[in-house]
Length: 228
Image: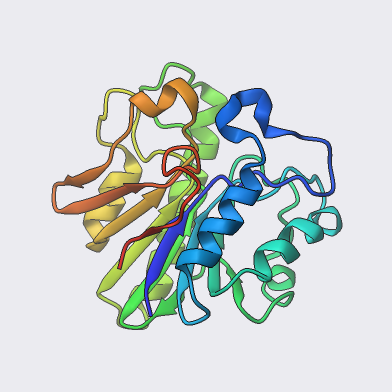
């Protein structure tokens, strides 16, 4: 039994969104994911998927992509990414599959660990951060705390957080997300979102006692990485 992580699958089985427009590395990327997944992951393992699952716009349209993930080995725990417009009510999502769990203000257990998370957002100090972003950013801080509070209320001390966006800006300044991680004693943070040239600006490894793990598909060569 092991815990893996990956993000930014960007599946489009039900829509015309070829990812190879972002470079040759993305040609038939879903086949690379599937091959690596089946090679390394068993039904006893759990995989954290940190957002940007499907290009679909509605839940019904996303089912082909979600079914594809569901048929892969292992249990999956998923958070929302910025492109997951299909994401609907959390109760409905969590009723769809037996071995796929969706996080929104809640958490799920993995042995003695709590898996928490939220989508996150662009952080203050980023080049593109605007007044509109500030409202969404503050809302995501609340959602992250709700997820963590739900785990703490059950007595969990070992916590892994998934957040789709990087939890800091390009200068690696401390954000509200990082402050919350410290406040709640989060041990590991899994995130994604970054692609292409942005991969040169990655927070990866331990900082202030927290391990940050970057999991965008093109960063980890479309191969889920073992984190526990």
